[in-house]
Image (cartoon, rainbow, N blue to C red; front, side, top):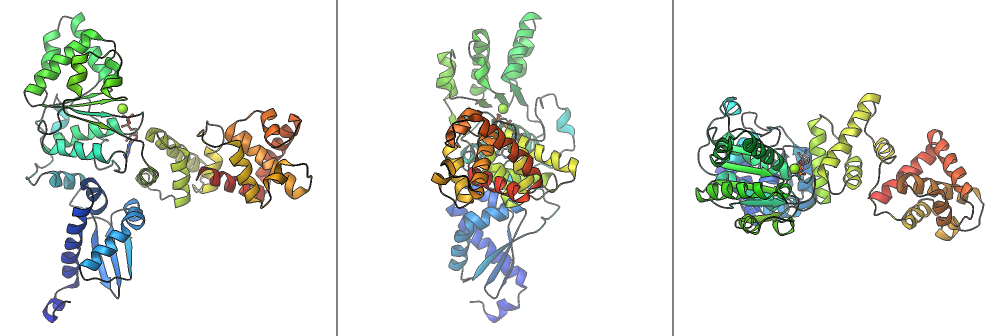
Length: 464
Ligand code: ADP
Ligand code: MG
């Protein structure tokens, strides 16, 4: 489709233009947040003999493009005249002069952004309570937080204009604090003079109490009412504190009337916060309230990969999936599990393999509750290619007894069932059988590789 003259042009040039056109179309067909997260920093590296190579900045974007967006990319290439046989994704390092957080800010608004003012914003008295580690850059967007992310980005582009107040709510450890802190940091990066205040509700309460006690009420009120962006985390803690609710109400009104941005987070929606004054409740829903949902499996995988590569480590897909199944809702716990694994491996100079991961995390701690004894027995029987009747029945052949003992062991180590209950599940009358079996497998699993492997494979199948 190219003329001779065009062919003379450098290939890179052609590929750049072509890719821009592909990106332009993709941008229109998916959400803004997805586009920014997954496509913004991609480039076309090669287009030859039906193979298109796309450069991506990191492994999780690579996987996401492969798994979720490959069809879209192939189709869009086709529309642009490239009938590629295959698209390959390759990790390449980004242009070092361009940091991603700056990119995001530029994307938000087509206005010139201020250069980062080295450190000066840090000392500003209004840079209160913000932790620089929380950025948009290291926040993974996926189903569950996409909407909240987009709203927060819109606020950075135009504080006080669009979603005011923004009320984010959702369970523990799903990224509320991270996201609202990222707004504060990003606003300050753009405008180091902005008066951004981040306060936990507990802090707000404490300062209010102190102000009353030391009769410095005016300072307290003035400080909060002087903010351009006020971020108050965990407002469920206002429940039952009437005096403070009243103070908060006035602060809210003053800021809102002056078109200053207010961002609030809570672990539940306003209507479910007990003993919250009606007038405050109604204010909270004036702007936009967004329910942050638990991260889905792919988002959890992406978070694990990013955090692991932050530690300079690339985990195998099996380990990533194991972790993503191990913790399903709380990202703080997910990070905890990952850190535990990394520390364990570092101390023992081990590779974080699936075996290591499952034996470390599979022991001790409370496990997700959704696994039933029946599933354990089923998966064990299936692994050894015997029937459930065999495993719970009377047969005493070795190739049935060992699987039975392993099933008992897993019921104990994973589900923490009592010995009598374990015995009953496997059709045994005497609970000492369970005690002996579990003890035996526990010992053998250290020396006998095939038993060790069986346990880890069965567990893997239970959790995936
Ligand atoms: P919440 O305030 O909702 O209880 P946090 O914002 O404190 O949760 O998040 C808990 C931890 O998980 C933090 O370390 C945060 O950085 C991390 N986290 C949460 N969501 C994400 C995400 N989407 N991408 C990367 N890290 C996340
Ligand atoms: Mg929080």
